[in-house]
Amino acid sequence: MAALPFTLRQLEVFASLADTRSFRQSAESLGISQASVSSQLKALEEQLGTRLFDRKPGLRPLLTGDGQAFLDDLRAFDRAAEALAAHRRKVADIDSQPLRLRLLAGQGMFDGYVRPKLDGFFARYPLIELDIETVPPSSSVLRAIRSGRYDFALFNLRSDTAIAPDLVRLAMVRGGIYGHREFARGHSLPLTPDQINLLPFVLPQVGSRQERELLQSLDRFDIRPRRVVGHSQYYDVMAAMLERRVAVSSFSEAILPKSMRGEVIQLTPTDDWNLLLYRRQTAPDPRRDLVERFLIDSLLGDPDFPALDVFDPHWRAVKNG
Image (tube, rainbow, N blue to C red; front, side, top):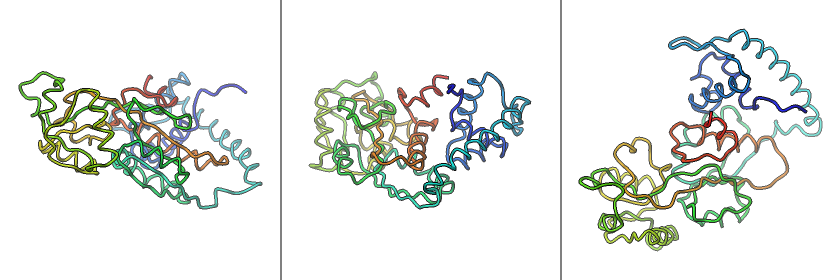
């Protein structure tokens, strides 16, 4: 069977654009960002070697002649796909059955990138329910997913932690000591460990696994906080303390809200972080594939997600143009 110069997701984006003639409306209906719609279309056109839409500022996109011909063929492709899918429905019509999945997600990633897109996903797939728990970054996530309680997990681990075979590495994200730019006034960046050690720190909860692992990782960089001005298990509370110039802390750039990235900066690098996906092994189910793709696209398809490098094959191809 010949390799196809497109993905099913690209066809879905193209069909939506042909229907709505609006990048915004297509993004809302698909539960992704406008930038992701644009990237998918650009990749499709490049892979086909032709322009499918005429796009001019202030005007709705219009199908070109090649675009209309491609749309006609896509409709035939859809009919053939439906005929093939009917063989599965003769065995069991799973699309008519509700599905409830449990998801474990890092606090910052979920709040910043997944939660804002959930309404579009649920509107598109009303029979899929996601029961979501959020946690701060820690190796305890690994024990939680080994319990078998979760269908999916989306989380960060420091880059010095070994990656188990059942985890998929999606991207790498910058890590370091972050604080308000005022803490760097009069100094060259990056700050030295001695300079960092004198700054006020906010740490995870006292005695928690997160605190112990953080202090151990910082010790490898000769960073040993001398002034601890607060503890919190909530990343958004810690981020607010950074923004208010109350403290500095160890952060993954991915969980630092975009609104803060102008004033809150990396004062010195430490460990980077791996963005990882876990999917519990079950019998094949296309709805689980939809959830997996949604989770990946929510982050890697968001133009505000600060990936240093991307390993997911689809988004690596898109971002490398």
